[in-house]
Image 1 (cartoon, rainbow, N blue to C red):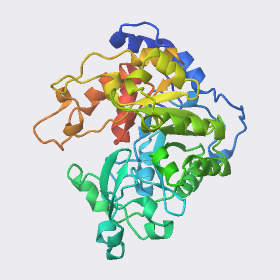
Image 2: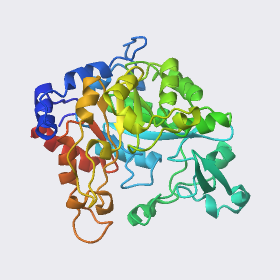
Image 3: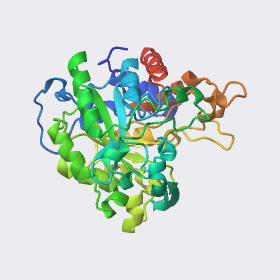
Amino acid sequence: MTERTRKSPRRRALLGAAVLGTTTLGLSAAGTAAADDRGHDDTRGDGGRGAGRHLRDLPVPTVVGHRGASGYRPEHTLGSYRLALDLGAHIIEQDLVPTKDGHLVCRHENDITGTTDVASHPEFAGRKTTKTVDGVPLTGWFTEDFTLAELKTLRATERIPGNRQKNTLYDGRWEIPTFEEVLRWADAEGRKRGKPVWLYTETKHPTYFRKLGLALEEPLAKLLRRYGRDRADAALILQSFEPDSVRRLSRLVSTPRIVLLGGATSRPWDFTEAGDPRTVADLVTPAGLKWIASFAQGIGPTLDLVVPRDSAGRLAAPTTLVRDAHAQGLILHPYTMRNENVFLPTEFRWGTDPNAYGDAFGAFRAYFATGIDGIFSDNADTALLAAADAHRA
């Protein structure tokens, strides 16, 4: 599949219909509406700085390098991002948390106990503490208790060494990157490769940080404006599990936006804080999706919202989420596909080793058949081969 190849709407609709029992998934409408920023329309090009294209220019299925190439390198490092890009990922993901002095850095969580070597630094032993983040008590070290200069003395480590022992070979090789460093890297790579490097950027725990006086949206928007990624045609997608964060960003920049959705019974933390009784189950109804479409261009649901698993861990019948979201003009980029048995639906596991690779291609085939527009994957190379298979089907 070439970089800018898309399936025809008819082929995509038929593919989804085979699973969902419908003949109209509305891909064309989704692709068109995804490009609508619901703000100003500035389509001027900007070379390698990530402008001049729209969401509709992305190939379908779109492969998102989840935290880079986290199946092969410690996540959220320049090494992981670079490998994902080299493997061919269409978009590279970052998660953003703040430092004590207000810099945005790329970590999956503000708790850096398991993703850095902070525990081996005696000078920071006194920083270990217990906090409650979005209602969950955690004990460890947290980015908001460190200045950027202090964080730069740490090195990244593999988050799940029990599953990915080979990745520990790279422990200590890379530091924690700032988001501005990633923007500069993406611009340089874009100039080198002759096309913008797409980024997928998440605000983590925005309500929690706003209460600490470390709001994420305003400094993020400032960086997006500085690096020309604040427009409707920016090669960047903003995302958050908190709809209010996405709405705040929609008032600051015209960059495309996605609302992330967890399990059906879960509740966005900003809803909890505001006393909003809605759960994710409410947000994936036609009415909930229509509300999301008023300020975002798509959703990032957990894969179980697209195809649930039964009590044995096998895939059950798909839901109508793809059809319903497309009917509202929303694109869908579900998360997260991983190659290891332990993460796969039961019927796609091979052998008894939970950390060995299973039939990831079979799982990708089942998910792509629903008509999703893309997928987050820790293994971009596997996902790209699967996407090419889906394109030929």
